[in-house]
Length: 333
Ligand SMILES: NC(=O)c1ccc[n+]([C@@H]2O[C@H](COP(=O)([O-])OP(=O)(O)OC[C@H]3O[C@@H](n4cnc5c(N)ncnc54)[C@H](O)[C@@H]3O)[C@@H](O)[C@H]2O)c1
Image 1 (cartoon, helix red, strand yellow):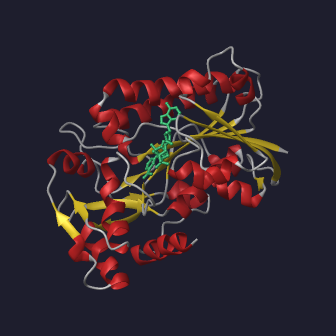
Image 2: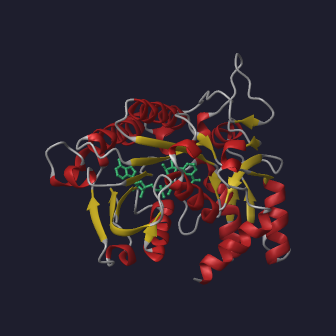
C-alpha cells in the first residue's frame, strides 16, 4: 500500500495528477511493482477541487506549505507517512518576478519546510519535484547552446528560475545524505492549460489556443517567430509518474532531468489552431507586444535533446495538432 502526497494538489497539474492516481488506484514507486493507493494527501493554499476532496482516500490540508508543515502539527507527522511526495506547489514565474518575497516564501521556504517534514521519521520517501526550463537562460558570459542537453548548466535569469534551481540542489543534497530520494524533473511549458489564465509568463501560450477554441479573444504578447519548448498535460503527468516509478539506478543520479520537448513557434501553434478550428480562430488573437513577458519567455531555451528522459521511455508530443486534439478531448470530458 502506498501513501502519496501532492503539494499544489489544487492546481492545474496537481489536480490532474491526483485524478490519474485515484483512477489508477495504484502507483509504482522506485522500481517496485505497482502498490495500491491507500491515501492521497493534498496540500494547497487554495481549496481542493470538489471531486478530489469527495474521494474517501483523499485528505485535504488547506494552507501555505510553510505554515501547514510547522514541526509540531499533526499534518507534519502525516507528511512523514508518505511513500511518495510530488512537490508541485509554487508561486509561478511572473508572480515571483513581481513579488520577490512571495517567491522566496512560497518556493524556497515552502520546499525547505516540506523536505524537513519529509525526512523527520526516517521513511526516506521518493520526492518528485516539478522544476522548470526557467533554470536555463543566456547571459553575456554564459550563452545558451543552440540545443540544451542533459549536461547544460543552469543559468537562471529570473527569481522563479533561481528558486527552482536552488530547490533542485537542496533536494539533491537531502538525497546525497540519504534523507530523501529526490527526483527533480524540469517541465516544459505545459499546454493547453484549461480553465482560467494564471500568472505564469508563459500563460499566453495556452491562451492563444484555449480562448479562440472557445470563441473568445486572446492576447499574444510576443512575435509569431518566438519559439517555445512545450509538452501536453498528459505527457507531463506521465513524466512525473515515471520519475516516481523509476528505480534508483534507472533514475540515474542527483541532478535534475529535462523532460522531452516539442519545439514550436507561435506561428506553428496558430497554424495548427487554424487547421483544427478554421480561419476565423486566429483572427481572435490580438497582438499586443509586452517587452517584460517577451524578455522572460525568450530567455528560456526552446530546443532540447533529452536523452536521459528518453532512456526512461519518455518521448515528446509528436506535433502541436495532437496537443490541441488532447485539449479538445479533455474539454469534452
Ligand atoms: N504548468 C507549466 O507550464 C509548468 C512548467 C514548468 C514547471 N511547472 C511547475 O509545475 C508545478 C505545478 O504547476 P501548475 O501549472 O499546476 O501550477 P498552478 O499554479 O496551477 O498550481 C500550483 C498550486 O500551488 C499552490 N501554492 C502556491 N504556493 C503555495 C504555498 N506556499 N503553499 C501551498 N500551496 C501553494 C497554488 O495555490 C496552486 O494551486 C509548479 O511548481 C510549477 O512551477 C509548471
